[in-house]
Image 1 (cartoon, protein in one colour):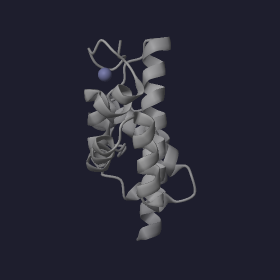
Image 2 (tube, rainbow, N blue to C red; image 1 turned 45 degrees about the horizontal axis):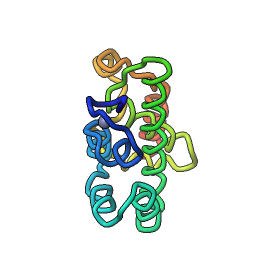
Image 3 (cartoon, rainbow, N blue to C red; image 1 turned 120 degrees about the horizontal axis):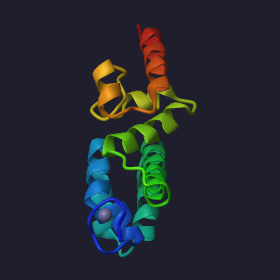
Image 4 (cartoon, rainbow, N blue to C red; image 1 turned 45 degrees about the vertical axis):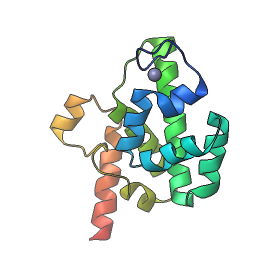
Amino acid sequence: MCASCNSNYEDLNHIFFECSFAIQVWKSAGMWFDVQHAAMQTDSAVEAIFYLLRNLSVKLNQRFAALCWSLWKHRNLKIWEDVTELSAVVVDRARVRCYSSAAHVTASCWPAAAFCHGSADHVAAIECPYKHCCSAVETAKSREV
Ligand SMILES: [Zn+2]
């Protein structure tokens, strides 16, 4: 039983490539085109993952790996702690993961839609657990100016 949707089965292929929740996450992160292509070119989830890791740029590799990790964490939170998350939270967690690493530039090129932008509305609406990243964004912005 999939923890993210009403599907009756859960395998790697479903969790990462077929689940409507996962597809929403890939779309929010601007990666669905690449991910869908990889899934269609290959016969298994593992092959698709390695296909992507071979063919994506370094920047997108990092994003892809962070999103896989975040999707898996989302699944475990639901199963073991009964925590329900929105897809935006899954994307934000991955983005913060990339963000806290060396290159702020990497994070700034992610699509803005799903990112924690620090407004009071946003933080309240999705109970954003990544409020700390907002100050990092502000710091990065002030550096650019
Ligand atoms: Zn599912």
